[in-house]
Image 1 (tube, helix red, strand yellow):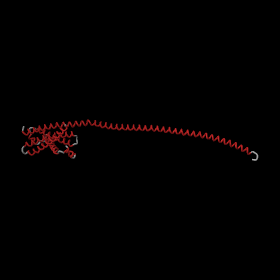
Image 2 (image 1 turned 120 degrees about the horizontal axis):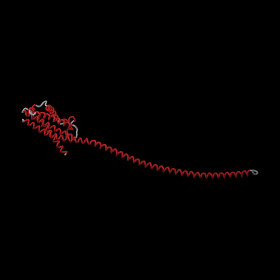
Image 3 (image 1 turned 60 degrees about the vertical axis):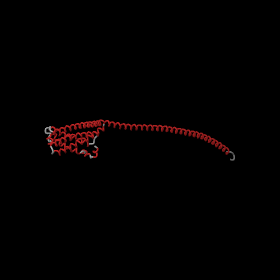
Image 4 (image 1 turned 180 degrees about the vertical axis):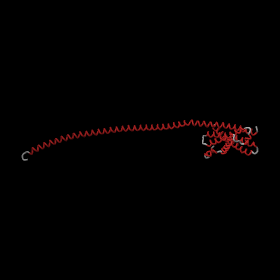
Length: 149
Length: 147
């Protein structure tokens, strides 16, 4: 992450801004879903016979968000090469989890019908962005691991 | 099971599988990081000891060099002092010999002077005798008729 050095220290956490804001939004959505206080209507409709999946989805959002935020926080700090690699692995975990959860949500929204296509496409874009970013980071990590051998 | 649910469950399963694989990777990386950190922590005292030993060796070298220099200086000073003592003793002997020679000369001179004084005394006595004799002759001659 060489571009981090060009940023002021307080901005390094936001070096990948979309991750931070999507993770915060997912955390805000995931906590009520995990504890069962509030669910998206579209998802509740799609999974009406599988309420445990709603909780699992909320938990997945929370886990993914936390993993991504912790990973970005660790990446922003000065650390060793192995520490940086571990933090980026954790970022991949978070991004994959967020991509899964947002894809589930996008499917649920699209399943509502034509009115859900617009909102579903935005959610699907977020899922694709997370998946794409996760794939890019995992590719970098794979190359680094191969370079170590 | 309705169609969206099937898709959701499929996505869920796939995502969880990929997430598990990513988690496994992360756990391995985290294990490597912790091992490296533990190894660094384990080696930290050894490095400290190594630094201390290195500093102690440098101090020992400096001390050894200082002692060597002091020993050399001591040897040099001892040699110089021995030479000084020899030279001082030789000078003292030379002064003593010169003094004895001068004293002998003075004694010889004194002896010669004593001899001369004796000769002078003898001469004076001779002269006195001559004077007495002349006085006597003069008296004898002056007590004669017509004088």
